Amino acid sequence: MTAQAGLVDHELIRAATHIAATRCRGDNHTMAAAARAEDGRIVTAVNAYHFTGGPCAELVVIGAAAAQGVYDLDTIVAVGDRDRGVVPPCGRCRQVLLDYFPALKVIVGASDSLRTVPITHLLPESYVWADHQLDTEQIAPSGTS
Image 1: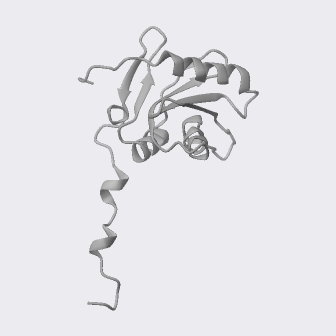
Image 2: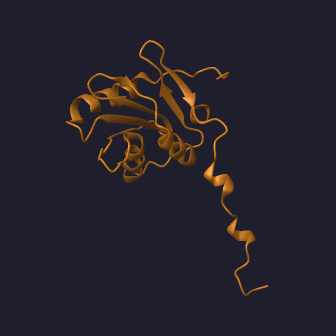
């Protein structure tokens, strides 16, 4: 990564840490996420673990944000329960976060080296879903000229 890391939103980390400490219970909820909306609001969520998979906290926070009318997220962080600290998003989350919020910033790193990086730095040379969608206005319905 050659770009300089941005300032770290410590309030966002505290929010995720608080949710991890107070809402993560047992094996079903082991991660918390907090995201800051463009308007400054903070949205939090926990993962929903299940042996068949289940959404990570970062994906749950997208739905929680939408349920609160928040559709533009600026920064996100995930924190593990049992004082595990900041945890970087998994590959699936990186792709989804990029597709939903291409300008999103993500807080990553160990407690002594936290930094804020663009989601694009966590998924270089990535597939951008929106770039590969057909432009429906350019496609004529079949049977018409």
